[in-house]
Image (cartoon, rainbow, N blue to C red; front, top):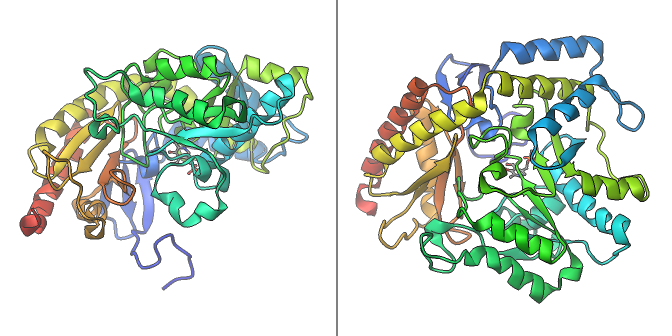
Length: 445
Ligand SMILES: Cc1ncc(COP(=O)(O)O)c(C=O)c1O
């Protein structure tokens, strides 16, 4: 045993040696298709020459300067570039170092916005949803609605949770074709129950990720949410940490749902794993409340906005645009999803195959008609992941999506440079893996 305190101490880990494009290689030379980009991070694949070049150039100039004193060309250029890509007046870039830092910062920004705007001292709580993931720090975990929070509940903030928009297991027993988006109206119910005067914002992932495996919302969901947020004077925080920067086939996933949020949280694909980075992108109205008020957002982290990460992100976002990778995500994503449905749904335990762009999920069930999940103790998500590792395909497993304990899924989020041939490779690997799982499950049916 080495001296690293791993997340799962008894699990054995692959040792990475190097990466190239969509592939990772272990120290024995075995090749793996990184079909989840780690955790939806490596959107440009590994060892991308343009990013290595940008990193090297910036490191030779200056890697670190602290935002309390210095600005830099990379952060200003990055902010200008991102302002051209975001919807509406989401123009102001507040830099941090990762996704949890971004959602944490958004909690404080929303609270301080109402203080600056009209001195409201009580408007600080955040409504989020069940079956969501917003990070692992105490504030972000307080918003998170999945089993990751359970061991830590005594430490968490009193933030209410609305129903998820999860059509496969609709909490209101409706069908998406005929429903009245009851899940969106649940926000209004909560606002009335809790009192909107105490709520500063509603936060949601535009496409559900780590907690549930690529849940795409009902097409009308976010329009109702936007209208309720406006009616009750609360901010809409769009957590695009996983879905943003092209993952879903649009620059921001929310672009597909016809609404403009007030704050966007971003990380992961924004620097594509080459250097840690995250951000809150604020609309002008939020920024102006600070500008016309105290002029200071009382927040900050040491590495936020360091020139090296900003130069990396600038090169990443420029590459996304120049190489039309958002389009590639949509086109190859649609191709992959069609194949996955065709090849995987015939397996008796493949309950749902879903997604948008190159963000896709497979959910496992014991019974397709009742959608009954497997017992948690069987560890199906981890089992299939281990089988797929042998096949040379890496996926991102998750559990607890059905009822907080039971429910198995995995997420596919391959690099956005994926070709159709590589998509076929993923499908072939999954079919081989599912065939092996079918044999292993034989008597469990
Ligand atoms: C939607 C969302 N928000 C926040 C986070 C937390 O990001 P990080 O792990 O960079 O802290 C994640 C990570 O998976 C995420 O998917």
